[in-house]
Amino acid sequence: MGNFCARSEPDDSVTRPKFSIGKDYQEIPDQTSGEGIKKTIAWKASITRPQLEAKREEFWRTRTTGRRHIWLAIKSAVEADHATAAVLLQMANITLREGSITVCEDTNGNIYEIPPFIVNDPTAFVNEKKHKVSRPKVAENELLKLKLRRPGKAQDVEIEIESKNKVSMVKEEYAKKEGISASDVRLFFAGKELQDESTLLSYYVSNEMVLMVFIKQT
Image 1: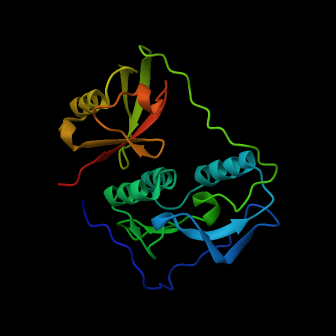
Image 2 (image 1 turned 90 degrees about the vertical axis):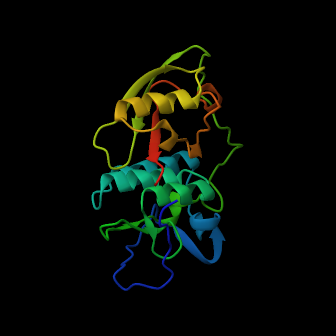
């Protein structure tokens, strides 16, 4: 799976800026949130779920240091469960400085810092009602135009495929365009790895969506 490792020793070269999303934003030193590499210090603030989502989008949109494809890989990892996140970072050759996704390093030595409010939700939201995840409605025979994005590649690969088709067919189409073996292609969407025998419909992949592509290390 490549050389994925986490550094546990402190490094004085890492200077952590004070991230905040509100005047009452407060980190809770004796409490944690999340699991595995996504475990962070817990935090609280007077914020609603939509406000937090907007702050997160602003964070990703305004990253100017480092390399764009590394930020994209980290974003995909943050949006995945902790086990999948570790795989995504490994395939992108991203090292964890202290065993946590909050401080990452690329192969050029660039540091990428991710504040706790990007990785995990607060201890409670303001005016929180039962949160329902809305799923896009996709017809079984709908023709989808998809973008396949691979970290490190300047251009997305665009394909057209029906929603009823299996993930394996998407891999074959991508491999054909890129001149590689379909067996080396791994696809991720919404923080999950897509399995060959499942259909795009089963993952609620809709038109104009972006699938993340990673190539297996040999």
